Length: 551
Image (cartoon, rainbow, N blue to C red):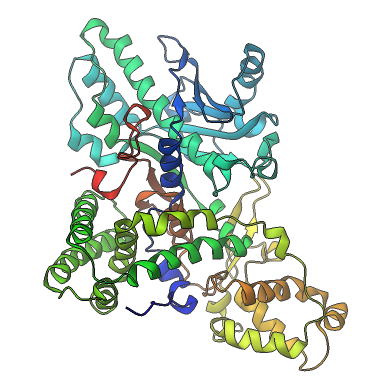
């Protein structure tokens, strides 16, 4: 069969499609667990110091081939009225840091004075992340009561939420004094993106279940039972994520290209596979059934997501029919994908992408090593480039940016800024709110269109930028896009109808998140590591695939 080309950026890099991405074998949580299983990481029993009131700390150490890391978890008892997912919260049910090594008592004392107060405190270069989490109050109380009375909580009740605690932040890369990623990026376990943060969340999941069992024993004494292995595995860690995450994809265009290009290369590889074997088709069928079960258990109250879930469930039924009825030819997978573009919604199309990638691990897993890059290597502007060459690149690569009329109010209805109180990204309404003078440069389409209008047809870029320095940012982006075609979101991020959660979902799908649950167009809840094996279940043959989802 002829090799299939990767899908063009004009198709892939639209927010409407990016907001339908699903987790895949290349997602960072799954990369982490495959490495942990392959290298036989040793997860030690926790050093437990939590009292009968549920207050104290615990240390979870994992020994890697070259070094150990330890999650230091602090448990707190806070009133219900202080429990909030908002970034302005000042108290949490649990707070965490990932320690580089094994902490001493002196370290624990220092951390106990800083980790529980989060932004108000400071950590050191010995710490790699800072995080916090809150209980899902009703489910937590219900689960504790069940276990204390010697009963397992209802699987249906657990599935309604899918987690007992949800994080409201997992800070890394130098925030609040933690070690910068630059210092650890060459360690083998951290080469792929966000592995520090994913390890933190995985260990938090272990702590949450242990804390649940502990509180059940406190309440029920000898009558209490521990949460069953199946129930444990069905629970992930929730997360509340807002606009703070959205600009990341714009601020890191070269990294975004690497993520998307790896996923698109994986898809192209599978679409180029010749005649599939019966075994390969059987693997696909297993995964298809598993994701249908998962989609049917996906809960959300937001009308936008309710429709997406309904579309996905219907799409998966159609996909099953397509799969069963399609002739087994030398381009079977390619024809199945092409049929999806005509018969399925974007939700179904992008779920199929993950399913195809899932079917051929040996073909695609190595691409995870291509998902990191030193972005500073591509920061310099080539001032010797001819202005007309850049003009041609803008016309070719940024046609999407030249379409809107930016003088129309709806085309620049929003503006992005950073809040003074929490230094977090926010989105303002340009013609309804003050503050547009504080606008951040996320107006890529408008900026590039303005650059083209000012750019002469002759001369060197260096000469042009000497007199028009305001265009340096956009010139740099265009030159990078010439090398990295998947580096730009091809939509107007100022438009009135732009949906910010599409950006969040795209990024979170690469993390490996599932069951996206928008609460507005600006923030959502997700589940992480749901159905993933715990350390005592982790092995090469059991490191989290679609067929390991609850059935």
